[in-house]
Every structure is written in structure tokens, then in C-alpha cells.
Image (cartoon, rainbow, N blue to C red; front, side, top):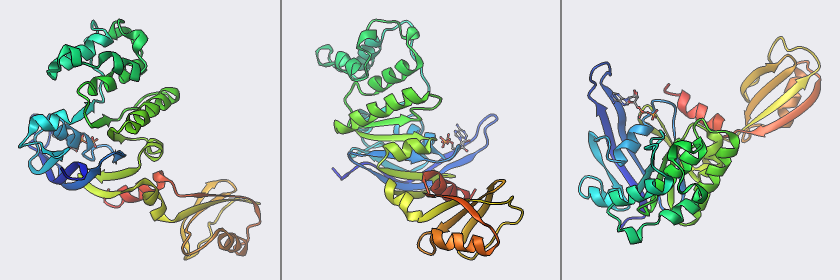
Length: 311
Ligand code: ADP
């Protein structure tokens, strides 16, 4: 098989539109690879086409053209093998409330045709720390427990690839941290992870590579550090001695903003300028400087820049 865990080539999705839904070109010829063994982030604003792509991989939506191969299995030519190679954790939590976590996993194992003796229900419950909820009704589980059960359910057939659609949407900080740990553990055991997220911090923390899609097109696909470093932007926030009425300008400033009554934020490219020059320019413009902080551009800045271009 090829090196990639998932190979996406020229994928187009045109929704025909029915009832109230307008026809829509949701994916405009998307091509990229998800490498094996990493945590791959799929980012993009609402409506970018992330769910459409995941639903195509899950076999829930038919693509209009192009090809996708999962763990070396073309989804059209070998749908069964492709399906066995991927576990998908949906965004929405749906369980029969009267099944216990153990039964949920046993049923799922049965659906995949896994013989009772070979099922891993107990082991998976331990992995997601639900062993003491083995026989509780699913409806009595907390939101976080349900999410962990969904992850276990996606892993019953031991797929080499796990896809999580917005795993921590609407989840509190503590639970988010727990889910991150679980994702990292699975990845450390060799599972290739793909996740979509709205939380840039999550992508920055968890993903070693990030693809950004916007309006059905790929706008970036790079190792996380490179994506952030590529921008080379730095931001210096300067508190001055008086209220800012007029902002200073300079050809080396990428952006100047009044961020508070006496606070000026200057964004510059560190390849062209430095904090010293920025401060000198502010003094020249008549400001006395009381305090200074600097920071590197983070993923949020990169994201805004990349997705605002064609928005
Ligand atoms: P994301 O997951 O990135 O928010 P989606 O894949 O859900 O994006 O949607 C991509 C685009 O396709 C959006 O403009 C959305 O309105 C449209 N779309 C999604 N599903 C349908 C559908 N069933 N019929 C028509 N348009 C759809």
C-alpha cells in the first residue's frame, strides 16, 4: 500500500439541492494526503465542507467525482475494506438510552461481524475509563462519558484510522483535556487520528499537521509548526503615556490598532523589522512608552489571514 493513511484526489461534491436546500458546490476538487501515524487536523470555518468530506469517507454521502483511498482501499472499488479501516466518531451523540455501555460495544462488534470471543468490549471500556459504567444505562452517563463511549464504539473493529468530528464542541475545559489525553493515547498506540475542530488551540496542541479548507478548497496543508512559523509575524503591544487619538503609520507595520485607551498593537514581519524599530517609530511619533509586551502570531492569526482572503 501507499504511504498515506488517506489519499484524497480531486474530490468534487455538488449537492443537487432539494426542498429548501439550494444546489451547492461544497467541495471544489480537493486533493491531499493524510500521512500515517500522526494527528491530522482538518480546519475551516462553518460551511467550508469538512462534514461533507467526512461523510463521504464514512460512506454516508456520495461524491460527485474524484477518488478517495483509505488505508490503500479505494472507497468505490473496495468499500468494505475501506470501511473496516476507519472508525468515525460523529459529532452528535445518539445511543439507545436503554443499552449499557457494554451492550453498545457488543452490538457494534456484532454489526461488524466480529465473533463474540474476539470482541474487545471490556478492553475498550477500560481504555476510555468507563469500566465502572459497564452495566449502567447509557442515558445515565454524563455528556463526557457519552463522548468517550462514542470513541470506544468507533474503535470496536480496531481500525488503523480514527476520525473525530468536532470531538470537544461544547465541552468544558476539564473534559476537553481528558479527551485530548485519550486521543494522544490512541495515537501513541499507533492509530492515525484525523479531527475537525473549531478550536484553534486544540489544533495547535494536538495536531502535528493541519489542512485548512475554505469554500470547498484547500488553502493550507502543512506541519503545524511550519504553518504558524510561515507567517513570521510578531505583535508588539505598547502602553503609552497618553490617550491614543491618532495611530502612527510606517511602511514596515503590517497592522496598527488601538487596543485600549493607551494601548497600541503593532503587527510586523520579523524578517523586515523588530520591536526596537517599532518602539523608535512610536517615540518619533510623540508617544512616551510605559510598557511593552510581544507575542508571536498564533494559529488564530494564521487562520484569519488564510480564510479571509476569499471570504
Ligand atoms: P462544514 O462541515 O465545514 O461546516 P459542510 O460540509 O457541512 O461544512 O457544508 C459545506 C457546504 O455544503 C455548505 O454551504 C452547506 O450549506 C452545504 N450543504 C451541506 N449539506 C448539504 C445538503 N444536504 N444539501 C445542500 N447543501 C448542503
